[in-house]
Image 1 (tube, rainbow, N blue to C red):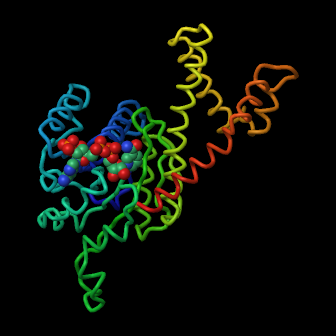
Image 2 (image 1 turned 45 degrees about the vertical axis):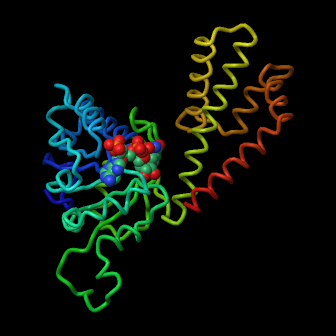
Image 3 (image 1 turned 90 degrees about the vertical axis):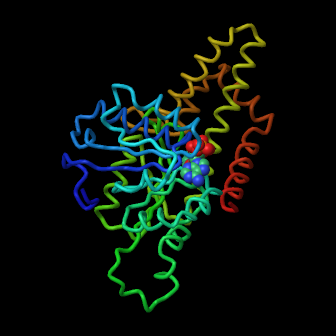
Amino acid sequence: MTTSDTPSEPRTLRIAILGCGFIGTAVLSGILKASDTSNNTSTNNLKFSLSAPSQTSVDRLHHQFTSQRYRDHIDVITADNATAARDADVVIFAFQPHQLAQVFSDTMLVEILRPKLVISLLAGVSCREILDKLSPEKVKDESKAKSTAPLPRVTRAIPSIGAQINESATLLAGDTDLSAADHDLVTWLFGLVGATHEVPERLINAVTAISAATHALAVVAVDAIVDGGVVSGVSRPVAMAVATQCLRSASTVLKGGESGMTLEGLKEAMSIPRGITINALLELERGSVRSGISDAVRYAVGYAEGM
Ligand SMILES: NC(=O)c1ccc[n+]([C@@H]2O[C@H](COP(=O)([O-])OP(=O)(O)OC[C@H]3O[C@@H](n4cnc5c(N)ncnc54)[C@H](OP(=O)(O)O)[C@@H]3O)[C@@H](O)[C@H]2O)c1
């Protein structure tokens, strides 16, 4: 299949995930779950090839993805990127940014990648950097601009950890040179693992920092809330179950939908006179939590932009 085919057609789409570690595994798990449950028959024809250099990771991937349930979707699990990418229509980069130079030192892999749709998950690495590596002569030598060789097709997607439970907030670079068909394919693919948000590539690092800071803050907040409950005599499992469910419901209510509320509406609804919530809110303000949070986000944005 070429990627110009519409994703809804029931054909085989081959996807390679190079560097299938934490986030590659989360995305793959989410896609496979969606293809298990979706009514969209096209998702049943996804075939994956996965790479990770260490034997430990190869063994983990075999253990995790070659069960009866997913066997039909997994073609290859290998330590070699070129082997994984060779027959793929789409190649997802899921290794770490500092591994990029090492990955591109494989000249056979670079040749294999040139005609493919490449989706990079790498934080802080621009499409331009990858395009330069895939077609340096085209970028640097205008006289070769009329070459008949296909132009590389590169875009970026930044999924979040929620991908594994189909609750990702995936950022997609919205201003690349992709064809409409490639754009639709990327949107469809990451739509399988949750919500997608298109942002201009120049803002993708900043929005990634918002996503990262939100996860970091949720961990710190839940941890502190649970400790606060435990010190007051509540058992840790009960405190944990209540805190995580409340976080989930507050987020769902704020996200909107029919029963959605604004931030102000939620605050007002919870803050009845002499109520517990207004007391908790005012105590939080005494600890400069609000400025602490926005400072943390600002720092994370600066860090991401400097990557
Ligand atoms: N973690 C997140 O929440 C998140 C979210 C969005 C985007 N990202 C991006 O996703 C990428 C991966 O992050 P991660 O958290 O999944 O990291 P990770 O768990 O360390 O995964 C990196 C994977 O790359 C593999 N690898 C190492 N050298 C390689 C090479 N030369 N060629 C191919 N694969 C190689 C590693 O294999 P071995 O285990 O065998 O060494 C590992 O499986 C990063 O670029 C990050 O910016 C992460």
